[in-house]
Each structure stands twice: as structure tokens, then as C-alpha cells.
Image (cartoon, rainbow over all chains, first blue to last red):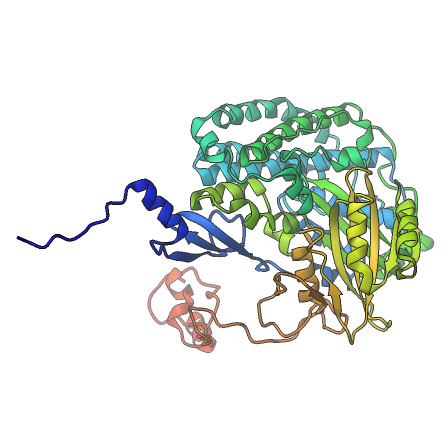
Length: 412
Length: 210
């Protein structure tokens, strides 16, 4: 008779239990989601420790787009730094311009006229729509809904046309100046804006129809990357991430700047704090931005579009070329920069990605002593290890898309 | 509760450790002694409900003593106000208590402070460089670090393992030739030096379109 071996018949539940406790000796795998990756939204490197398909730990590695903006700012005047602010959150350059101009104006203690404020609000809201379109489009693309990406980019082309109309550049706008704007809004800009506002809600509805009740999209986003309210506040999350987790806080309502107190709009707030809530918050924010833009276009005030403070701004070109005092004034302004008072200010704006803050330490003169950029993407990226533990590798893509960060701002 | 009231409560509780407070453009900054910063932060989060750390910045005041400074910007969601704490750090003892135990967001901010200035944070769970690579020898945001940078060795990567190959066309013509309609003669890869390219472009040997 053949020897009988004893065999342990383990059923699948026990086997799974043993696997979780490590008795079967499942190997943990460390993979690299390298800086070059279609789904990491820029140059972000993630070192992911996987147990099979499940994420055990994530270490984000940033700094691939570090250009030394803060060091550069110490070596140039405030006005010279404006093009660098375009390249922070390069998906919404107008919003960064507005935030920076408001920060330096707060330092100098100067006000801008209402027309300038309303134009800045229009710029910021256009930037918000543009950024959310790309954020949602990229997230949908990564999850597999490619049509949404193309719809979003078709609308973004219209926004680029508007940017080109107002400041000459589609992308790197550098539109605001300290104390005002580079140039007044052209005559046909409001026509373009109204036409855009007429057609855009249809696109949001189309995207809504494609995604919001789509079973696959819901399955890939519901209860993925859940961020509790306490964690969101503890980690300093701001913007749609904080609002998706249920905290009703928007700088435009809490500390209104640039005339936002005149506008009527609502703040969408989520409940669960998962990827789907963040998606819904961004969708609704776009609709609210349309509302703000409509009000701004209807109530655009006339008048000066630059602050009357002549010392800060460059004089009119005609006067510079013909009169002596304006020539000297222009020269001093360009070479020495504005004469900012000594002191420290922090100003933050509600950027599409979150709270973009500029902390300026000035010792007087035209260049800051220290300019710290509080980048929302830098702070929000800390959440990746926290909210992706326990999910699968394919959920990482949804989580990264829903956090909607941009590396230009994160690395500065 | 407003920021000046919070400063008053700090002065009552911590006395000597709280220094001068400044109000500029309706923002309040108060100097805190380096040894007490963790206790002050715990107190502010628990009692005055400054539940969010908005920003943590390092500053290099070259020429002053103490040279460095760490600025904490706190925000209260309930009271909707900011408060700034300043901690002066001298160059010979660049150690500050980490506040990651109070607000977990301080993690990356402090790593950036260490990366850019060299300020170490005691009790930080993972004090490594964040923007520059591990092993980078300098602290870039210090005032004595030049704007153009200091040439340093790049880290080894898996691909080239420390060896850098020269570019294949180094020494040869990098750009295509101009002044000719022939795409064949325009191509730079057939020449070894720029001189050869220019000579061949000026004097075409074969019967080709000029």
C-alpha cells in the first residue's frame, strides 16, 4: 500500500486569512511609478510598495520640476517676477497672476479700482474653469473615459482664445501688474465671454451625462481615496479636496478679495470625501464659475483699470516719450522696481487647485527679501500615502486624478 | 477670538517665552522662543483652535544674529483668522522641535526647510531632502548660495551607472546646413566636422539641386 501523506486542505477563506497575516510569505513588491508616466500628471515619481495588487505604502518623490522660483524672486523686482507666477500652476496662469498681484498690493497697502477688480475676477474664474476642465478631463482619460478629455479640451481652446484676446498670449499670460493690469479689456472680449457662457453649460451637461451616472465611473471612484474631515484639516488640504471632505471653506467667501464680495455664488461641499465627491465638487464649481462670470459681464464697471497711485505703475507711453518727469519716473520704476514698504504679508487666493498663498517678507525696496509660495499642490500631495493605502494599483490613478495637483506649483 | 487676544493668552500662559508682537496690514506676528515652540503650538491648537497650519517657511537673514528664522502661519477655521509665529534659529544650533505631532501637514514643509536652509527639526519622522536629491551637498535658499548654483555631481542612475556618454554628434555640425534646397546635403549627420559641412555646402560635388 502506498504511504499516505497528510494533506492540509485549506479553504479559500483561510488561505486569504493566512495571506493577510503573512504566513504564506507573500512577497511585497516595490515598483516605481516613474517621473515619466502618463497618469502621474506631470513629473512625479511614486515609489509604491505592493502586496499583490494592493497598495501597502507610497512614497512620493518630488522635485523634478524644481526651478528655484523662490531664490529667483529674491534677485529680481516684483514686476519682473510676474512671468514666473504664470509657470507655477501652468494650467491656470491667470489665477496665479491675480493672486500675486493682490499679494504685492497688500504689501504696498494699495487698492485697485472696481473695473480692475472685476476683470481680475473674470480672469480668475476663467482660469478656474480651464483648470477644472483639464483636471476632470485628465482624470477621466486615466480612468478610460477618453471622450470627456476631448470635450474638455475643445472648451479649453475657447478659453485660450479668450486669454489671447485679453492679453495676447494663450498660455503664459502675465496679465496683471502691481496696481492694475497690463492693458484694459479689449472691446470684443465681453462678446467672446458671453458667447462662451452661452455654450459652455451644454458641455458641462454633456460631461455630466457621460460620467456622473456612469456605472463604471462610479465603481472606480466611489469610496476610493476617502479623506475624513479631520485628516483634511490636519493635512492642510484646501480647495476642492477640503470641500469634498465636507468642510465648507472657500477663501472667496471667508476672506473675499478683489471684489468677490459683490458676487452671488454657492460653494459645493461633499459628504464622504472620496474621489467621486471631489469630482462632483469640481463639476459644480464650474457651474458656479459660470454664474460669477455672468454677473461680472453684466455688471462690469467703467472707469480706470489701473490704480491711481502713479508711483507704482508705469506712466502712459505717450507721456513717457514726450515729458521729462514721466521719463524719469518710468526709468526708475523699471530699473529699481516699486518702493515697497518693509514688513511681512501673507495673501492667499482661492486657486482652482486650492489655496495659493504668497508670503512676502520685504525689507523695503523693489525686490523681496523672501518670497515663499504656499503651493496647494505641494500640500495636497502629502495626502497620497494617506488615502491610497489599502486600495489597488488601478485606484492610484483615480486618486491622483482626483487630487488634481500640478507639479509646476508643487516643485516651484 | 481675534489674533491679538490669542497673543494675550499666549503671554499669560507662557510669559517670558513670548516676545514682541507686530501687527502689519492687519496680520499679527509674534516671536516665540525656540525651546517652547512645540508647547505653544499644542496650546494654540487645543485652546485657541488654530486647527490648520497654512504655511511653514524658513528664512535666511544673512548678516543678522540669529541668522535663520522659521515662520509658522496658523489658521483657525472656526474663528477665521491667521496668526504668525516666528522662531529665531542661530547658525551654530540649527535645531527646532518638529510640529508634525500637532499638524501632520508640517511634515513636508519642514522637509523643505531642511532641504533649502539646513534647519533640522527634532522629532521629524522622515527628515530627508524633498526637492533636491538625496546627497546634494548644499542648501540652496541660503543667501550665500549663488543664484547660478554651484556645479555638483549628479547622482548615479540605473541607466548609466555613473558614466555619461558624450553626445553622438559632439564636435560635428549640430544644425543642418542652410543655403541649399537639397535635403540630402542639409543633413548634418554625414559630416564629421563643421568645417567639412560648410565646405561641402559651398562647393557641391555631385549634380544635385542647388
